[in-house]
Length: 157
Image: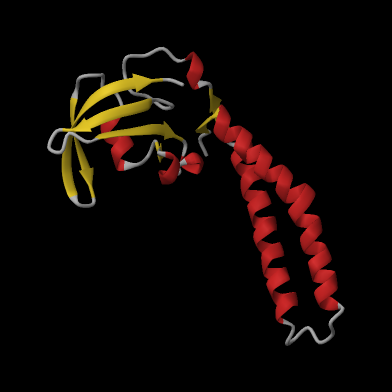
C-alpha cells in the first residue's frame, strides 16, 4: 500500500490516541473484565460481554492506529509555498449563488472531521479544488447537485 499523507497535527493526534488506548483504556478494560467475571455465570453476564466487546474494539483500534502510523507520510504544511491548492491547504471559497463563504482544510482520510472543517483529500470537494488557484471559479459536485464557487483564499497553516 502506498504511504498516505497526513499532517503533523493528525499524526500527533494518532500518537496521543494510541498512548491513551495502551496506557489508560486497555488496563481499565482488563479491570472491568475481571470485576464482571467475579459476578459469576458468564453466559448471562451482560457486564462481562460488554467489557469483552469493548476490549475487542480497543485492540482493533490499537492495531489500526499502528498500521496508520507505519503507513503514513507526514507532510509539514507550514513549509509549503504554493499558489495552487494541494494537500494541507486551508481553502476559503465563496458560493457564487449565495455569496456564502466556506473554509476547509484538505487533510488525510483519517484526519477528516466535518465539524472541524477538515475534509479528506479524496472527498469530492477536495478533488474539485486541487490544483486550482485564488480567483479561480470551480464547479463542485455535491450530493444535492452542483455548486459554483470562487476561491478567495489559500493558506498553508
